Amino acid sequence: EYTSVPWSSVICFGVQTAGKHFDLDCEALIWTEIMYDPGSGEDDPDTPGMSHLELDFNKDMVDILSIKRYLTARCMKGEVAPGVKIPTNLIAAGPVETGLERWISKWGGDQIAIDADQVNADLHNSPQILRDDESVIMAYKAGRDITCFTNMRVLMCDVKGLSGQKVEYVSVPYRSIRAFKAESAGSWDRDSEIGLYTNNHWNMSKVGLDFRKGKADVVAIQKFIAAIILQNHEDLVRFTDQTGKPIVQTNTSSAMGGFMDWLVDFSWAGDVGAVDAQLHSNPSILLSDERVLKVWKENRDMWVYTTKRVLHVDVKGFSGKKIAYKSVPYDWICGFAIETAGHLDIDAEVFLYNDYPRNARDMQKILVKSGDIFVMHEFMTDQVFYPEVDRSERFYYS
Image (cartoon, rainbow, N blue to C red; front, side, top):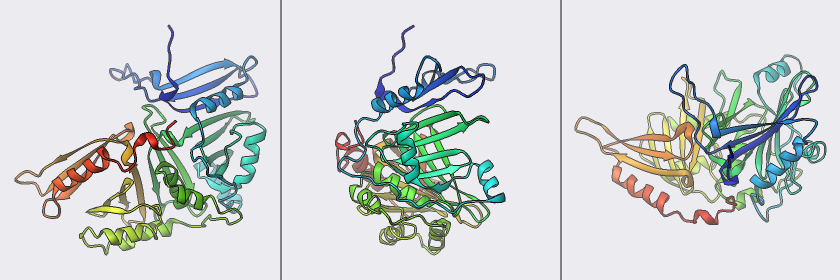
C-alpha cells in the first residue's frame, strides 16, 4: 500500500523525541485536513485514519530533529509577514512564582509569561527548532512545558517523563488557524484562555491554551494573532516595534470584563459607533484598520460584524465577568443561510457555515421587530462572495 498526502493538506506537525530509558522509538506527528474514519458504534469507535498520522523511527537510526526541520521547511514556506522585522522580548516575563502558587500553576496547566528572548536563543541553538528567519515574540511556561508565539507559528513544547528527555514539539502554522478566541477569567476562575481552531478533524481541531489570571496578557495575545490572521501590517509593525518596552499587563480580566459593565447599559439599538469605540479601547479587541459594520444584541451576548470578521461576544456565568470573544474571519466562512420567522415565531435566524469542524455552524437569532433578515443576507453576500481583497493575494497563502 502506497499512501500519499500533499503538503497542502498538512494542518499541524510535530515530533516527539525518545525518552532516556527503555524507549527505542521517536515519532513524527502529522495532522491533516482529511476526515477521520468514523466507527459504527461502541464496539467500533472512531479512529484517526488519515486525519492524524504517527510515524515511528528508531532513535539510533534517525535524527528526529532533522525531520522536524524538514517538516518546518515544507509546511511553512516563506515568512508570515514579509518585510516586517520582528524583534524579540516584546512581552516581559511575569513575576516568579513560589510555594503553593507555583505548585498550583504547574499541576493546573496554567501558563505564565517568561523571557521570550531567552527562549528564542535556546530554540535557535540546542536543539535548533526554529528557522533562521524566525523569532519568538511571546513565551509562556506551565511546569516544564512551554508555549511560544513566533512570527510564523504557535509552537508547543511538552516535556514528558521523569528525566525530561522525551519532548514533543508541535507546530501550528498561523495559516492553519480558521478561528480564534480569547476568554477572560470569571470572578471565581483562576484561568483565562486562548482558543485556536483549525480544520483538522481529530484532536487538533481546537488548541486550548490556559493562562494564569494576572500572569499573562490575553488581550495582547488576541491582538497579535488577529494582526497576523486578519492581515494588518500596521498593527503588526506597531506591536513588534516595542523593543525595550514590555507591554505585559499584570491583570487583563478587568479590562476584558469591563465590557460587561458597558453592555448591561447598552440598549438594543445596534449602535455601531458605540460598539466600535468600545472594542477599540476597553478591551482593545479590534485592529486599527478594522471597523464595526453591524451589531446585533442577543440577550447578554452580542454579534459584531466588522470589515474583517464576525466577532461573537459570549457573556458567561452569573456575574458576567467571564466573557469569550470569538473571531471567525470572513475568509473561512464557507456558506451562510437565513431562515425567516414563522407565524408564531418572534425571531429569524442567520446560519454561518465555517471551515473548522469543532464548530462548523454558528446560529444567530434576530428579533423580527428589530431587524430585516434579508438585509443580513445581502450583507453576508457582500462579505463572503465579494471580499475587499482577493484571497490569493493574502501573504499567508504559500
